[in-house]
Length: 416
Length: 125
Image 1 (cartoon, one colour):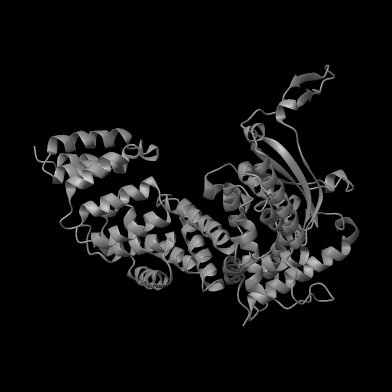
Image 2 (spheres, rainbow over the protein chains, first blue to last red):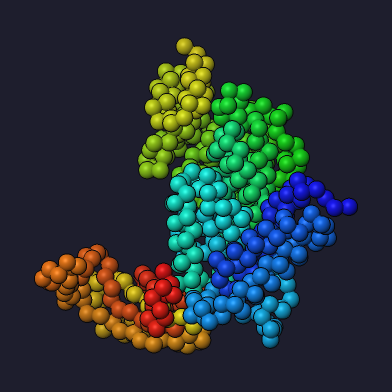
């Protein structure tokens, strides 16, 4: 039965989302020219829209890859003389290089990894890595990339173009890093995926195009876990994203404002995402304690707590202890003290001393959660006047309305 | 293969009061670097150590036919100055960066050498 045009459009759209990067990656290895591969990949999807109303192929990914690569071979043959002098992408030499180009065995997983490691190469500017990943791995148009990153379309185009030019001119290779480079290079990839997620996550609930980014980031993390099942940090990142995503709806109140973790309606959290996140985080923790895995563990402890007050703060604090050794930063140090101050039987006076030391950290000088945490500890020590002053300090530093309302409410609840 | 220029930046005060022993050590480090390049299957095409940047002179030629302006010292005055360079032929940037990590200098800028035999619009960035 021939599907109608509307349902075919939906099928092609789904295939675009699922298979764009694999089709492109496989075509890049053939053309050694990212722009040409992009054109041919685009052409394959256009042809799918035309051809699939007859019958949707059993294996859309294979169909699209064949069409894109055939198109590339045609164009390469037509333009041989012109292309000969272009700087070609340095492609990792295959163990069995075939006599006829384009006839090598399909190695989709390896090509996808090569593409993602090229997009996230440390020799590219960090903002270009994000733009290039959205363009090449997620198949977004330049206008969509601009919308996602809240920059002008011309700026997004410039980032992508600059990155592609550097890849060609400096010969950034299309290859999977060797074992000695892998930890650092993988961390760069995971950081980009995390940035993509954060860009979507900080967008408010109304902006659907940007919140779709969180789904894109989760897709990328899933792909990395599938391609590198032995890399626990990839699993840790996926767990972290799932557990953060699980709180999705409850982060926005009825008035469209952000709701802080302490005040979220936990019944609205997505239990299925939490279950998957917890099981992945637990598995990742067993084989390593990287920074994403530890952050996932912390998100997991929040996710399984029935309320803010009944959170297992002791365990949260232990995870921040570990995170402090793997990923030391002033913000992690503050979160660690905050978690320890909430442990049952915490030595609040000692916590206050630690918070006062943290005030010397330049990174925390304008960070409202430092005085807010101090205010909280002072209130619990029965020193409401000082707590009130600390809340005022926090209010001066706060930049968003939700935080201000939270702080004002806390301040109002102090005993007079 | 692509050619890369490694620009070696270091703190020049080291040169002002270097002992014979440290100098020998530095020379040995560069010898070991040359061996590492060969072992990686790459090649050193050229390499020189440069005199102190205070011996440098900068000529600004301008663009509108002004007289060239000659000033004492390097173009950019910083704590670290270019103390030497290598031109290395490597397979790709990953290999070049791996070699730069073995180069005995605190800062190494890696820049591809332009292939001037290609037509202008076919050159890289």
